[in-house]
Amino acid sequence: MKNLKNEKAITLIALVITIIVLLILAGVSISMLTGENGILQKADAAKTQTSIGQEKEQIQLEVLASYETNGSLRVEIINNNIKNHINGVATDDATEFPLTVTYSSTGNKYEVYSDGTVNPKGPSAEKLIQIGDYINYDPTYLDIAKTQRVDSSKLTYTSPTGSGTSHGNGYTSSEDNGGQTYTASSDIKWRVLNISNNKVELISEEVVKKDATNQNSGKFVLNGAVGYLYAEKELNEICKIYGYGYGADTSIVTEYNIGGPLDALTSNTINESGARSITVDDVNVLAKISSYTGETNQSGVYVYYPTVNTLDGVSTTTETGLGGSYYHYKSSEINDSNIRSLIFNEKYFLASRYKVMTNVANFCTYIASDEGLGADYSFRGRSVNWNSNEIREITAYIRPIVTLKTGVIDTSNIIQNNGINTWNLK
Image 1 (spheres, rainbow, N blue to C red):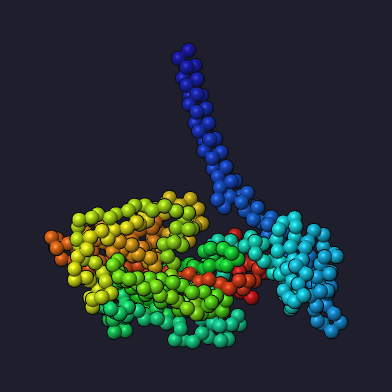
Image 2: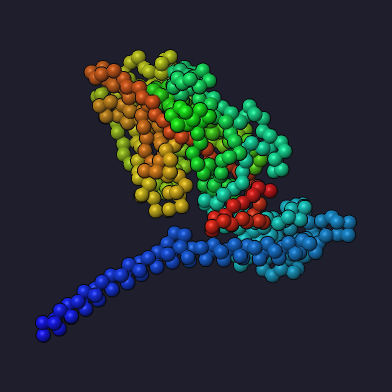
């Protein structure tokens, strides 16, 4: 009887272990099936791409059948052929190219151009291009054939040391008489960061380093009150050099602010470039963060603060109530693994600032890293009852965003490598 009991006990333990293992396997299987980038999601994406490919091929066949004997195309002939030979489509009956074709069953739209090309439009194009896809964008050439270089003066920027009354980073180095120089190159890989209103935004796959990599490992330096006052300007000016290449939407205007908490903030703009620095708003939208982490506004404590009205950028008088709202969160809080891998990696600056008021006042620039969203202060204003103000060097890399022109991505040819899409420009 004793041996029988032992055998039953062993059998029960084995059964419990088996059930646990089965539950673990079931959880893994469900995650692989329904989770982010799971089998069902990939199957749905493949189905969508197949549908778009078939619809586009139908239109292209009708376009080929519409050529006249002299080799020309007329929009009205294409329009009639498409409506007569493809079921369930509607056109905008355009009298000039492009002609828009819509499939009623899927809602996908396509544009037919005068040279006979057919490209997805609006939602159908967005279904093809995915967040994280690679785009073969080169900021150094003006044409797709890469025969015309962008003016070299536009491809480089030196951020000066500056002062409180003139823009700069506040950091004195041995580079270019104290400045920090960046030069755009063809080496950067670009990935899709956001798709909205048929506009595609790209982000550099890796952080951007300054030329003199022996200084701070190629990181950009913001120092003291001057670094805080002009952080948004300098970051956007650096990123601007990546927005002149073929396909970049140089019509967009990027706005940013310079100045201290009690200055009349000056709104400045980046013009004629399709590139800018990533901001805290960009990160929050992608991370789906909509509420502030905290707020500080301690009254009764008077501190010195940054201002554009003095040469060193520091006020000559003290002020209270300089706090405000701020964001802080860990990358692990972001559910979308694709977004996590895109925006939370090496430490880089965001062209956004805030201030925190406790018994001192910290004037900060937002920073993203593999840990999540945070900030660091370059100037700490202390009250008359405390020690002197604190000036700090903060270092991080740069991360530019480029906005492409509508319809410039060639969706007729997809290049796939290990399940990741790469698109060329047309």
